[in-house]
Length: 584
Image (cartoon, rainbow, N blue to C red; front, side, top):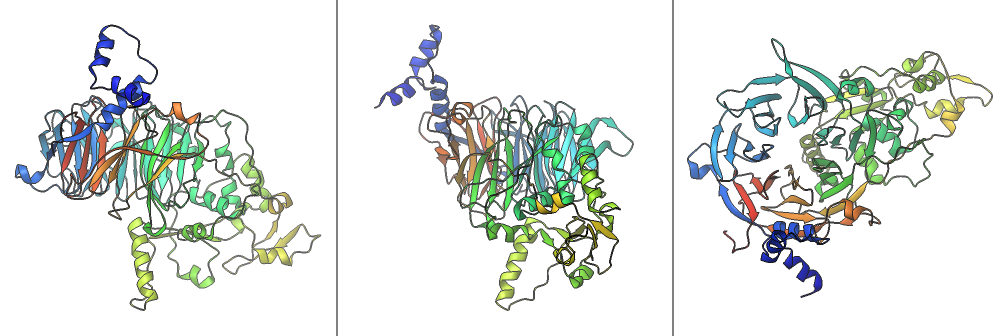
């Protein structure tokens, strides 16, 4: 036994020497906290379980989300069959059941305080509940148009924050009741939105999309977010970065990325491990201290599944200007994947056949430095140039359906017939290349035809904009990663941090595994300073085969060293540190 093993054994949570040293008042040696944490998490074993079949109650379906109350005294399970199950975490007994909590499957639970919590569902509603009276919900919140997937609560602003697959993020003032609903506001909209999370201090908002993009909003101010981000399209800005071509309508919002910005500063995170192109980021969690973002993503065509940890802390404020990108062009695979959502310059027949629909957000108006850039492009602004880019919003399910239809169509089994749910025209301000070639070098103005065939007025081209595009590039934020089993394709697996942030619980087939940053289960600040690049996470424990179906949810208790997991057949399993033999 080496010195490290002896040290870990002496400072283990199960060691009598540690307790004796604590009683005698001896100071803990350096690394003792890591050794105790490692002994607790590595000793996690299943100790109890619950199934609806054993209680003679209606089947619950899959357990899509698990949430503890802030003091750890209650556990609420959001279930597929429209129900809520409430448990006592210490006795592992169910204390209450709401069979018809929503009219469709329940997706998420979020406690606002020790007695009130909110739930969201595929029925597009958000419900408020009081644990002291579960016979009836306090109120249903109406506003989303499609499935609601995430609920957060801003302790700073006392606002409920919800997001759904309609791409909208709403804030709800739960203390301002009206006759029909709460006072609410849509603060942001972007297509392909999957998850929305707030940091514990509500100073950062982190979003993930089905386009492989993580969006961080630093110095969050919910009261001005709708105004600051009005008209901003993350997919369009990402397209500008990937294509290495300046898109004026996207470059108008470059000031949102400036590090000197005091509120609602935007940052894109798009770096992932080699072999992982992160087509869909399906799950997202924030570190208990707000240090990092934990995500789970699927690669193109579901080839692989990965868990990643990205740094989300703001760097030292210093003026940053857009730098000209001189890197190599992006791989063709990534460009093909992104063209599923954005397509440049459709033909006249495609434009006539596309069912154009109004954008839920008004067209952005230029302001500040953006206004001067826009005025140089045209005497009448961008209104004289017709739409030259079309954005289609589709769901993950539709994407898989489209891939299946195309694969069968290539074999001659079916015809290629698939309709996008929403197609929106975007005016980018990009000048058609054919008109650039037709212009005389000495002329400062020329006439440009649009995709619709009409000829607008003369357009003035700024040489500094067209000849030297300066495009801001994203910083590398990836810290740790690990590849998953990729079982149960199509299902979202909700992973979680432990209360101290040392351990990650990752659903792993019909079980789970515990991941740490190193073998000593050290905290993140002790490791990042010595890191020279992204590292592979370390597996410190696992429990496989406990569930009979795919594990899709997990949650650590905020108070006890306790872990809970739920699977698709409705079984819930409790894990705690245990030094004896396995109970299963």
